[in-house]
Length: 329
Image (cartoon, rainbow, N blue to C red):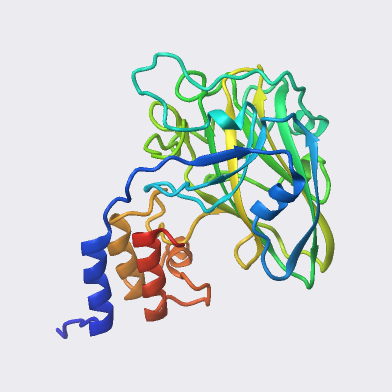
């Protein structure tokens, strides 16, 4: 039987992975509360082909909106962007003290829900009977040509682990209209993003950046991709809110509003080749299996196709190295 031999350049890169794929140093996310619409627009990181024409606060008050940076400590990272919270964004970091026997932060912003949140909730959000303290940001943008649109997000809540289904704080996003069928963002299992069913089996408590660290929880970074949209004007409504009461807060970190290609829906980022919700050393073998044809699972191939050219080859190795080592995915 003929032995399989990896190209020497690939072997060298994989050796480098084993040496350098160590956890990053601990850091705290830096949050700046702001209602300055220019700051919020700039932080969304619009890409070529997509131009933000207007940003509007639809619901919420000062303290619920901000920009963040330095969400950079492994194993959960996301590029700089915008934060929306059902409480005060100033209280999302640093990580909570694990000896506390009561969840933090908890901040009643005395803000109502939105009609679209309340219309979407029944039948989509577990045990839903009302939204409160909703922070809603409308983003109008223009596409130069027919394109898909993408954005990254991380959703966290201090409802976990205490009240995960009775108070199902949620993050929802509407595209080109606020009817329930216009909601486009889901968790990795295809459910609307919420503390209840979304956190069941998907929650992570090992964040090193924010107040959603142990004992609380969040979903690892996800990427929402729209269907192909016609060139011209479009609108997104980003909304996060408390559900069924005003207290115990949740927040969403949103980054990299851009044009891009992918399957319509919400998926984990590139690099999580074994699709376990984390980019770590376990993905090295999974990447190798896809690269050499031992694993043809379509989801694994999408995660390993770092340059989105439809194939997994040596061109993807270096992108995978950057993803694993410096978290540039």
